[in-house]
Structures are given as structure tokens and as C-alpha cells.
Image (cartoon, rainbow, N blue to C red; front, side, top):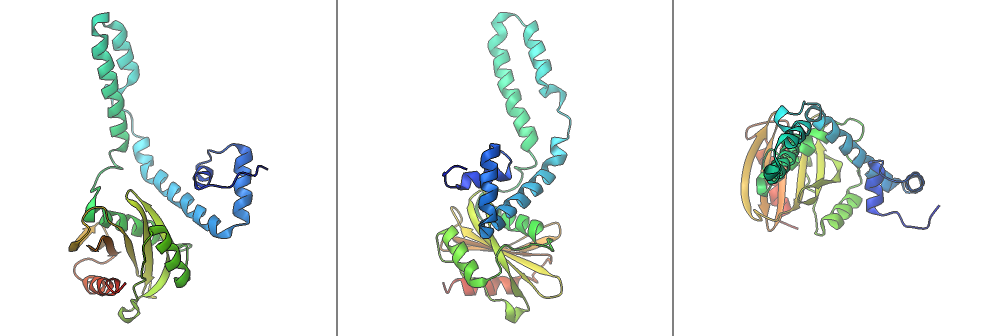
Amino acid sequence: MSNRPISEDDLHAYVDHALEPERQAEVAAYLESHPDVAKRVASFSDQRCWLRSALAPIAEEPLPPQLNLSRIIESKRRRPAPFRWAIAAMLMLAIGGVGGWALRGATEGPAVGLAALAQEASDSYKVYASDRTRPVELRDSAELVQWVSNRLRQPVKLPDLTKSGYRLMGGRVVPTAHGPAAMFMYDDDRGERLVILTRPMTSDQNAPMAAHSGGDVAGFSWADGGTGYSLVGPRGGDSLRPLANEIRKQAQTI
């Protein structure tokens, strides 16, 4: 066993099975003695499985004939030398086309601002709200607040929705394209769950409340003072608006 400390990169490489066997064993031993870190790594594994499952249909699609590199290379061999520069350009375009083809499903939708926050909240809801085994990572509210505040590098307040009939189940830190976000989950003891996602905003730092929906998920998103919030749940229309207003009112008292 080496004396090298276990880094965040080691944890992610452990999930991806990208470590050398000896280092993989060292990380496994470390996780056995650090259950809090093991829980977080387990959530990474859950997200990895979900992404692989979501992208599997795209990976199994046949490559379009015009992007087949074997055909392009064969065509290059048949071309006279003066046209090699043109073939090289075509190869570069083909490689870029392959990447775009493979990632087209993953890159659809908004990428910045309030719309991105709404999509991130909806995605978190779809992944975790249906999990009946481990929907949240931490259940202790005091520990949860300290953890997410440290990760987001700003104070975070847990909204109290008990008067509206929802109790806090717990939460976790989830990764987004714009940095870590805090996810809080609530339920009404009848099986209906809600998710609140909050993170610092790099754009739309002050934005009015806006409704959004997609499939069976709907909600409201807004931003105040550089922090964004998104409430999502299984209901549509304005049924979530009173809850969103209450969350916004409580958040402004931080």
C-alpha cells in the first residue's frame, strides 16, 4: 500500500474502473473506513449507470454511411495527390460529425441561465424522486445545511414546507455543467415528492419566477441576488406556485 492520499480524482477514477489494480484496492480500503465518502461515491456510481442507460440507445445506432471513416480513407487512396489537402479537411469534418452525431441527444436543450437551472432540476427529479431505496444522501438537516453550504461556498437555507403538508426527506449535492448544486427532497407522506435545486448563477442572476414543464415534470424557477432556485414536482399548472412563493420568501431571509 502506498502513502499517497486519496484524492477526488482517485474517487472518480475508481467509479470509472480507470485505476491500476493496486490503487483500486487502496481506494476500496479507504472507502470501507470512510462510510460518508463511500455514500458519496455510491451516488457517483448511480449517476454513471443512469447516464450509460440514457445514452445506450444512441451508442447502439448505426453510423451514417457518409461518416464511415473506412469509406473516406478508401476514397482518399483513389484521389490524386493535389487533392490531399481537401481530403484532410473532409476527414476533420467527418470526425467532428461523428462526435456531434453521438452527442446530439445529450446536448439538446438550454445550456445557460434560468432555463438551464430548470432542466437540471427536472433531471435531478427524474433520477432521484423515483428511487425508493436511496433518494437522498444525507437526512440530518443540520449536517446537510453545513455540507451543501461548504460545497456551494455560500450559505444555504433549508425551506420549511411543513405548513404546506411536505416534510424534508434530506438532500445531496449534484453535479451540473455550471458547478455543484444543492438538491433537497420533500414528500407529503402519500408518495408525492418534490425537489428543490439551488446553485450560484453565472447568468440570469436576478430573474423573475418562470413556469416550466416537460413530460410528467413541472415547476417554477427564479433567481435572486446571484442564487438560482427551481422547484419541480409531478404536478402541472399553478398548483406548485404557492409552494414556490413560500420557498422564495424563506430564501430571502438568509
